[in-house]
Image (cartoon, rainbow, N blue to C red; front, side, top):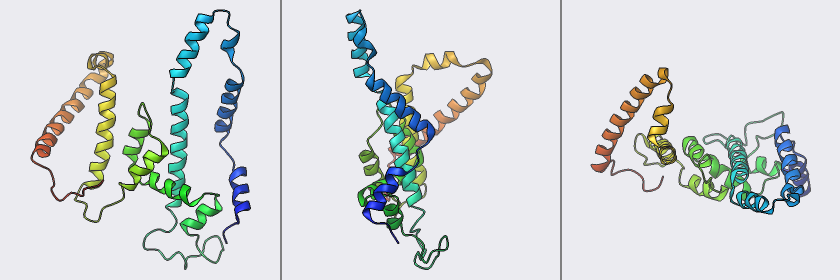
Length: 229
């Protein structure tokens, strides 16, 4: 039986957190409480530091990535319930009378219907596409990831290679972002001697593959492909 609203709130409030997560929150709270710059005699240096902090999204991006991964993992766990093709009302679990439904599992974890739906939608985003988005310079919001997940559900009329094409989209976007941020000369000159031959072979293979891809792309690709990914 699912818990009532009070029990759900208590379980959510008392759920254990990873030790490193709690330590990070403590350090951030200390950073918030202590303003080192306020006592600096050099006001110009203090101003420059404040300006840099205001423009630095490093901590914000880390927090967004942690939250996005937590929501995705919650969605992955939720998807283990109500698996397609299974009669959840006939499968006992842990000695209980019935196997938990996805909604019941979410309720018992203290999640609202909206949180549960969002988590599952984020979990629907293909792994490579999710990682490329979350690790980008400007990570998307959870709402943005959920919207992507709505469009990433398997299509009944999907052509062969649909899943791989979705993975390719995330991979090529991530590569494009990397290339835009790193001049070729910098990367080429940073390779060690024993890395050069294998890297050159990989690059040559990719160049050939992309050439074939562009040819197929210009020819129109698969006209039967679904409109939404």
